[in-house]
Length: 125
Image 1 (cartoon, rainbow, N blue to C red):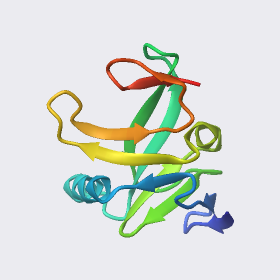
Image 2: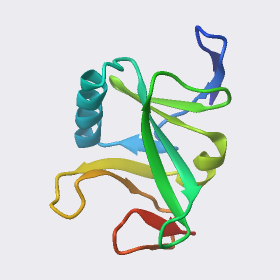
Image 3: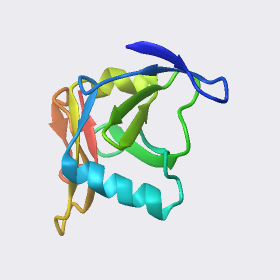
């Protein structure tokens, strides 16, 4: 990973698909969301926080730019940002998008999770 410094003097690291790969479906939907929210050039922030049925859950938000010490993953025309603590839980994950009636939205397929709750929104290690 390579250390970078953005225009606003924020120091972040460039990551790659070894941390989190983005499927074409997720990239397409993310691109649409960024355009609709007028955050073109922005990113999807993925964080792992305590909570949910299984103990840990994903928190996602559209952001303008990386924060200090974030990891930025660029995949084609879209970008993800992950804080260093969440990166420990996400290594090797895949961000996908589902149009399923029960699970419409972004889905993280995490090989590190030992179990998932039935709603698919939380996990444990």
